[in-house]
Image 1 (cartoon, rainbow, N blue to C red):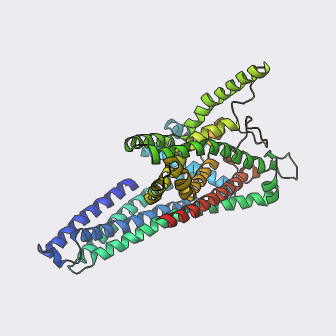
Image 2 (image 1 turned 135 degrees about the vertical axis):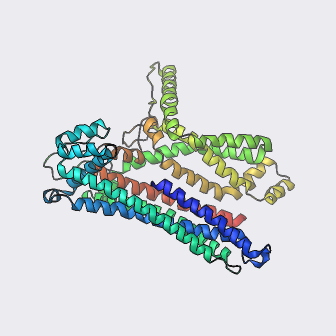
Image 3 (image 1 turned 180 degrees about the horizontal axis):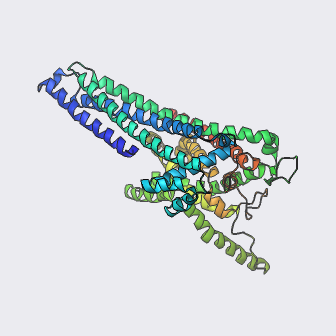
Length: 494
């Protein structure tokens, strides 16, 4: 039985448990619900939870533990000469056995027996079934593949039986515990609290796991390349070293990538902040309710457009437009119609990224401006100030901490952008101040270093993790500072 079907069966048992638990509670009440400690739905929920949760835990543990056990058992059956080979070779052999096992599932028993008798034809037979293997399988591989299928089927059967038995037993025992004075509501709410805590813990532990995985690989990189060369280097050239060379391969200077990241992000903020802030002021202070109900959703549609679409827009439309405009302006001034703005440039990437960030600035700023107490507006207008003076001298100063926090959050979004930069600014790691020339960012180089055949033993690949942990630290600092400012603002005006 597949995992999805098994979980569906467990859910059905839980649903049945809910109805019989509610029915038993109503039967015990005898039409007088006040005699029950909790409402009948809580009794049903108690039975359903005890039917579902233990079975789900069993499935979760089994799904993790069973492949580990099967893997170790199959590897233990390898011939001694295979066990003596490097771990990478053993992994390759196991992957090949897994492919053969998948092929065995579409073969009849007679076809499998024929493969064992004539191993040389096994590769062609498996390929004809849509399961290609890299080389002619050895006899032990065919036997191991057969054992793998048998163990997998046995594991699936045992899991199905165990999960259904546990779900049924949980429903039965919880059903028997139902009584008029049984505190079902307390039990259900306690279990829900545990579930909420577990969900929060998963989110936190996932973040910790991501950081730990990046940090571990970054440490391996810094064992090969000195940290000061990475953080203060001004040349990015991660080439492989020549044969027999003793120096580390290439140069891994972070400064050009960090400069490009900050430069493109700065240009993007120059575009997004004025437009987004003015749009927020209009929608919160000037627009009628009807206009606001239409304009704000339309503006926020920009946030739902995939970034690759913005990248295409920059590559096909904005970049060529700026290039042609620069050629026309240059021709009018000097008579030479050569362009001084490249199609792929900091300006192109920053402009398109700024358009993408407008809804973030406008939506967050609009919510913050709207949250300013009405009394401040009325007091300013009552003293004779105009609406524009009220906005400039009262509302914006009052909302400034929240707006700054929103801008910092938007800046962290700009720092992490990849696809727009790839298509609109290029991949050239360089240090320069001309916004009409291409530059690149940290995220683009992370993608470049992790593209292709990966070998996580070379600095060329491991540098991506050093770049990732650096970018994570930068965005984390921006977000923490932004949250600090927003929290201070909320404490002041709530």
